[in-house]
Length: 195
Ligand SMILES: C[S@@+](CC[C@H](N)C(=O)[O-])C[C@H]1O[C@@H](n2cnc3c(N)ncnc32)[C@H](O)[C@@H]1O
Image: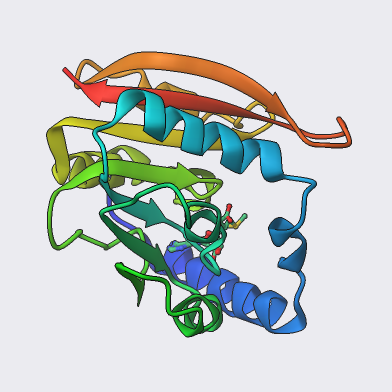
């Protein structure tokens, strides 16, 4: 099955409302401080190591644009952040980052408008309903440039998410584990290119 049921759509809609409420309350403000900095640093290091200079970057589930904030001095060609939370996208847009756009869209249905050198699922892939994860990933990969890279960050063990990246269409370039500043949390990060 690769279509969302009415109930799934309802749960996604409810989750979106919850995200908007949490962003309004500042529940995710902590992402801007140092605690999770090593995760963003690893993503930036992977971009530098495996991508071209001044790449175009698509950040899926971008929230308030924390990744773009941390890329400020890293020479990004173009940045597009996408999130279904209108509240987070408004905050991101209000930063007026150079060469950056932010768009409200649900990843279950989103088709990027152009090809990108780098596509990032930064703590967002596991929110995609498991009945359509493969389909969504396939659609997104259609807009990764031939020599582009896909970076995925997933909290802890990833609750069954990594198998979606173990496909013939992708070659793993790197797989690493990053701990938070306090050492109390960790993330796994995969970097892939198209075969
Ligand atoms: C844990 S936050 C990570 C935010 C950002 N990637 C970061 O690490 O700074 C997860 C984000 O995914 C977004 N999200 C969850 N489900 C989504 C969906 N179906 N479509 C688009 N965005 C979604 C949430 O609104 C939230 O901003």
